[in-house]
Amino acid sequence: MKTSISPSLITAAVILLAFASPSHAALDNTKIEELTGLKGTINEPEKVFKVTFPRGDLGITIDEWKMPAFMGLTTWAAFTEGRSAEAMVMGDFVLMQDEVNPVMSALLEAGLAVTALHNHFFYDEPKAYFMHIAGEGSTEKLAKAVRAGLDKMREIRATSPQPAKSFGGKVPDKSTLTAAPLVAVLGGKPQEKDGMVKFVIGRTAKMSACGCEIGKEMGVNTWAAFAGSDDNAVVDGDFCCLEGELQTVLKSLRAGGINIVAIHHHMTMEEPRYLFLHYWGRGKADALAGSLKSALNSQDTNSR
Image (cartoon, rainbow, N blue to C red):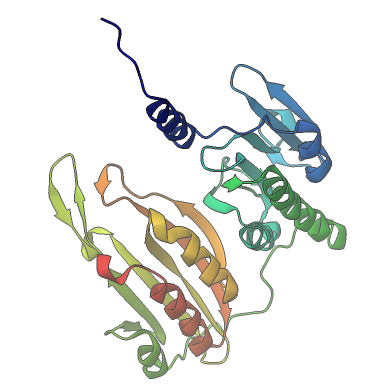
């Protein structure tokens, strides 16, 4: 018995297949090189085009040994075809301490996500930090975003060949902060000691291995510690972020002039999944509190 399939069913199947399996033209590797200003290599089996920038300009020593860039001091960005857009990119920027936050801002403003920030070595001089990035979009947009980070890095080194050794300025040796204005901004009841003020805001998670509920006292928290004076203060702390909140919090803190110094996880197999970012800010105490409050407001308050 012969079975016939109507033309309308065939047309519908073709349309559904097209939506289910988006197809993009092969990436223009020449364009990626042109827009990033870096030379690249193709990995045909993985369909990945990677551009690299060895940081031979830094003269970094590890354990008193001058380390070649080949041994792990290379900035890179790898491009491949995207799923919902033309391309996706992942990469890692090798940065000096004074490059990290300006480059982070440049990358965020250009539409990339910053997914981790940490060290790879001990006893490195000067200290090197590694900032991981990701993004999806048009090849042109992603390549230009990578270039924006590279240009900011070069701009800093052209202005100051030697990496800075501080954020600048001096925090008073004796802290004399007034807690009330900070409480007015951040709320809650802070801890106070020797003129310093600390706020801790808890969240909750469940450890999937044991089913244990954990919260603020077990380390699932955002905290902010203030020292110095009302007009010349420093704040340091940690933001506890759901994965979907991280980029918004980073953008908010950077817009408020807060420096990000680390992005990583503190736990494994917790539910929901949390990422933690450590930060350092300088300025008037109430202004710093306002920047932190804006970042807190950007989080999912329903998940607290």
